[in-house]
Image (cartoon, rainbow, N blue to C red):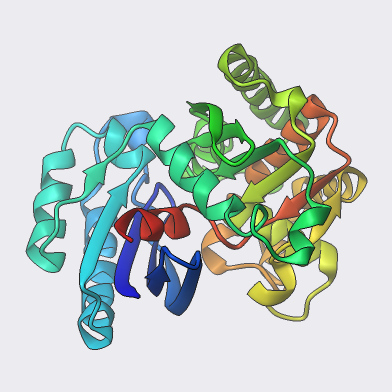
Length: 317
């Protein structure tokens, strides 16, 4: 067993996994998993820079994570940074801050690398020897709907094709729903149409290199997907064990997306599984998921709580 710490810093959230990894058995024993909404990508699509307040929120979370990593005694740490820090002009300021706090340099990975980590984390269990793995048919299409980008990867036991495109819940919200510094609440039909047009154009790009329609199992990752699943299950509070490997039909995703697009901020905030940091961006995230399901003809999405973090942890093992 090797005790490792994986950090995934995306556009909307930063997350930590500390686990004991055993490559011989394929076991990843989770010791601590946590997530903080920091909105690192705040305004990046418009300004091209990481905002000072967004950097400070991120560094505050890093200080908390550094303490957890020290307390649990992780021997190896890997910090992966994704869409927002790829796009920002002042990304060196971000890099210096992370090194000062955690002692490791963030790896600003490509979209394709991001997709491969996500695929490994999401499908290692599905491809395992346990009896339950037999119910998931290959090939898999793993979609990781982030804040700034969405990763698509098709594969069996290994990746066959991957593509990252610039659609995500934060990017779509800031591009189409923010007026005079405030989110339109609820969105106007024309705004929703503009979001869908962007998503459809991005799916066209993804299909140039990833055979989306060939997949037999659609696996959905990240907060937009898990939140939609929690709503579909009618959970009284967020429950990762109940959500992990839940199946949500395309009809139910369509109903939930319509409800989110017609609801107010307060109505969305009152949903029991809703994280406060997702209230303003969840409708856009649900639209991305629905568009993917409609484009691929998927009747359901298998929701996974294991994702890029688990893939990063395995890379350390």
